[in-house]
Length: 360
Ligand SMILES: *Cc1c(COP(=O)(O)O)cnc(C)c1O
Image (cartoon, rainbow, N blue to C red; front, side):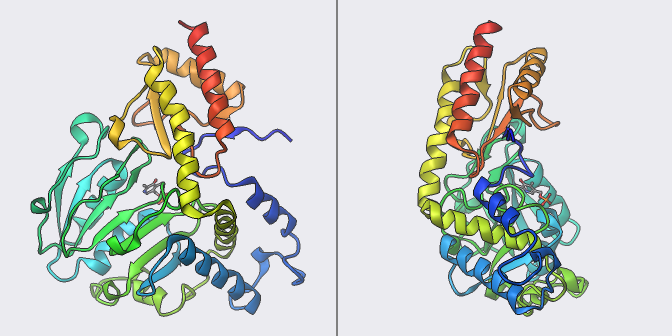
């Protein structure tokens, strides 16, 4: 078996230990005589898997009791509609900061249901920074403020949250969930598709303050109403059972690793290996301003499209796969989520050094 170093932005690497446990339990989970895939979601065996996953997530993220944790389907993209349908319900207004394609998609979807306003944007410099805002920039009458915490495509992240006063802050944390501690109480709602840092695609994690549930617009489809899922323990219909099971294994792995403080330390150290190299290379350059750099997604370029293509091809041959940049920005991007070991980044940097020497 030769596993590659997979720098994919998502779906992406999962911890090897998680995959091995899943493999061991594939034909028979515990003494049930069946795979988790084959279990009734109403069985007590599956309910135990589900409850343990939720409890561990609550523990790892320190989620207060007045927040619901929901395991939904439809990806983070479905949240772009669910959020306005459920929460743009008092003044029918919401504020958005546009830090890339995902933030923009959330904004555009909300604009279909109410008055969505762009407060700030970093489109002027290809989203290479996080725009600064002050409390005065936000509408105190807005029903919520939406941000994308870590911008998967452009490689920026918020290190300081916008000051939104009493207006609930909602963040898309799809590509940074569980990468470092986060103060849940600062948010009305957090959400993430699982396929970047948690599990296979198919489950979306929603963490929402209880008082924000229960006031959806009349047109809201039953399946898109948070009440439906909150009142039924995410089992109004069949949940993405297997993806939730894998998420549960990842949560256990995180606990074993020492929790989110330990992961932050590991992720900072890991990202520094790559950023330090980029800061000193004559050929490769990072594309993001230093203070807003993501720990998870690191875009870089040589400034020469042919050289970029040559690098991507040679990297692939050497076992560093999925390192091509997003189709909208070109260049390269190394996504280094929790499951990417530091050796993967160290070896990539060695390879980049060699490539630089050979192509100088
Ligand atoms: C990947 C990604 C999405 C889209 O997720 P889907 O689950 O494919 O809908 C949204 N936001 C961010 C920040 C992402 O990284």
